[in-house]
Image 1 (spheres, one colour):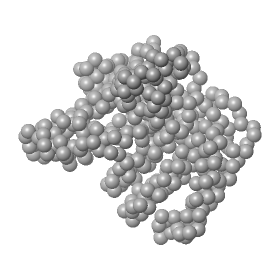
Image 2: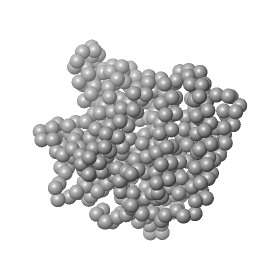
Image 3: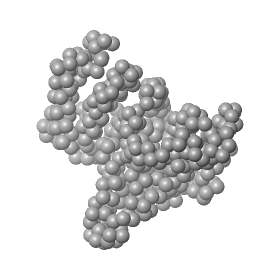
Image 4: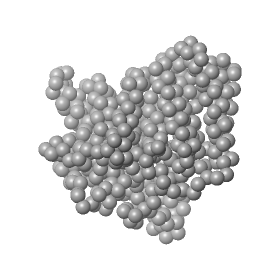
Amino acid sequence: METYATALLYAIPFFVGLVLLEILYGYVVKNQKYTVLDTVSSLSSGLTNIIKDSLGLVVILISYPFLLEHLALIEIKNTWLVWVMAFIAIDFAGYWNHRLSHHINIFWNQHVIHHSSEEFNLACALRQPIANLIGYYALLLIPAALLGVPNQVIAILAPIHLFAQFWYHTQHIGKLGWLEYVLVTPSQHRVHHAINAEYIDKNLGQILSVWDRLFGTFQEELEDVPPQYGVLKPAGTWNPVLINFQHFWRMCLDAFRTRNWWDRLRIWFMPTGWRPADVVEKYPIVGIEDVYNFKKYDSDSSFEMKAYAIFQLLTHTILLLYMFSNFETIGFPNLFYMAAFIFIGIFAYTSIMDQQNYGAFIEVVRGVVGLGFIYLTNDWFGLKQHLEVGVVLIFLYFIISIISALYFYFKSNYRLPTNSDTELT
């Protein structure tokens, strides 16, 4: 976990830097693909994901080392060939994992967060799940285990393979000629994120496009069918925690409400979106019917809200970077306590972005607890030994957060939801 945290210490600023570069490019060419609150929601989702992953909050059903020990038919020496085979095996497993996530109800729950943005840009690439709490991915690496691919090679290539999927989440790069036949490109991935009937559940590859062509899930981006983004049952919130578990909650309600016991059992493994007939009749869910004419989600797009959202995002990112840079010295259980402060903070400020009063309540309570923690320990998870004034800054941060939460709670002139937040200002 410490190694992963160290990698994230460098990866986070790199990804954020590329997001800022794409925003700047959008301004220069007068073709902006970002809105403030959507961007904050996307980046906040990324923060929740890396908190979960860095702390290892997952139940592993079966591990790759276990499969390697019991299934390996041959032993491959550590040459360039094993790296190529490992990469192909990981990409093949990624394709099928992705396909399961799109076609099985319970698995869609761990992937819907990635598709939830109604924009398409580099920031939405960081909408990664916290709902994937059961680790089964190693089962898809059985081909690698049979070939005896060393665990160390898989461990090195897996995060590289994941990070390499970032770049093609953009609308600013067109088709790439012959590369379209080899790699997953921005054009192909725009199709994947689209909710147009022609594009749904297509282009499931992660790095190599060969799997889609081989297994019949490839779809070229059509000039006369501009991609429209989001999910057919819109999230309707900026809160990444809620988005992560919306689909699961709907399935729980459907399983409880149906009178058919067989439906209660099979709902989890039916095709994505399937619901019991009696529940559909009594509790219909209206989704997007016309993908070219639907109202994108928005809330309070005032200057104060945008400034507040950006301030909270930057502060939580800095706190997380501090946690990663001092992963070993902070140690357990303090890592969980600090992560809880950050995680709850993300839940609170994104709820305030949604204009939910409980978000302000949570933030006030968190702020008071934070102030109490500083008073009792005269420190903030070892920050004092690195930066004497740092504790004072954290103290002031909690004061500002409390005041801001109360301001938005008591603010009486909230604007009605509009679509005016069309670009970063």
